Image (cartoon, rainbow, N blue to C red; front, side, top):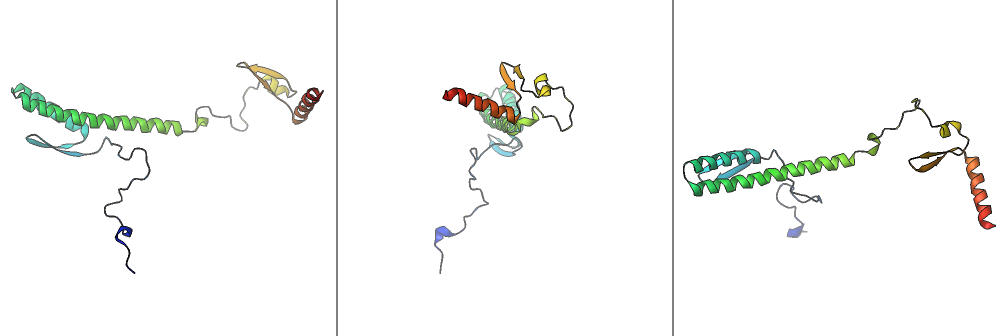
Length: 157
């Protein structure tokens, strides 16, 4: 049996969207072919911006205001493309930094690592300690259950 036409494989090279929020993220290394006025240039966005600015400067020096303005507009276009690529790269870098685990920022001591312990931890007798305005209590399971039982008894009475 013959398949309907819409069931056929699509043409092209797999450029379907993959669900990314930014499907067309510019890249700094993308090479462009520019058909500007009177000239065809190749290069990345930053290079094309510099070339068109040089052409605009030369045209302005020669007294050709209209040609200079046209080159300036092309330079502006490629400047905006370059800025979009730079901004996208910075955003990717920031997202990558956010994805790094927080443990790298404050590494935990390894087993057998000798570090000074606060007296409350070293004592192990249920002593309390103030750290940054918060009370830190080191309790054994038996002492914890005693405290919970006492709170329940005082609440029911």
